[in-house]
Image (cartoon, rainbow over all chains, first blue to last red; front, side, top):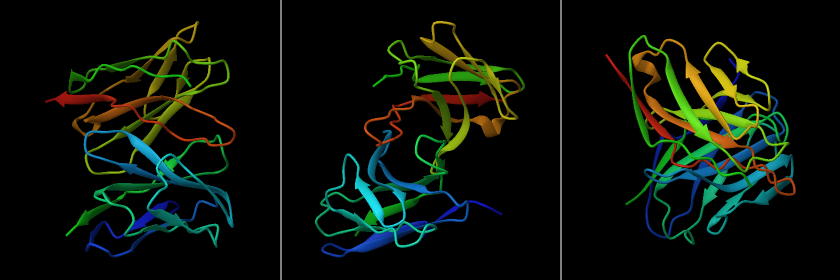
Length: 112
Length: 112
């Protein structure tokens, strides 16, 4: 079954701690994206990657970091510099840029 | 960048057709109209997209007006599982940063 998986479904972060959210796709898509969604609001782009070993900042990249060492994987690290990390994090992928984006099930991050 | 406007909420009786409107009066000639939906606490689900012509797939139909200033998503036989927030988006392209900007969408409630 092809698709996008995100893990974990729920993640708890203590103050001062870095946490990493996983995103994997087996769709052979070149482009991958990370979005943040706050309650009752739309999506905001954090980072995106069009090909392996390349990624670009989105609108709200501060306090986040990513890597794209493999085509299938695009992990997002929420660093301690992100002062308000509680949100629903969504990963998406598309076969190429300007193509339809497909989303994973999301990871809900909560701060203890 | 084309902004889209949708009604905040709509109800539809189960088994009837749900017609969701979207205004995008500033859309440019090369921007597609995309529709996604999001069921509570899940990742957005792609529904359909189009440029000029009406489109139909197994989920829905998309009717775009001739001047492209508005469109309507039609769910032909709504079921309770169609209760979700529906987002109408004009695909934004800015020097390769193809991000999806979701507004607040239309909360569609299917009534038994």
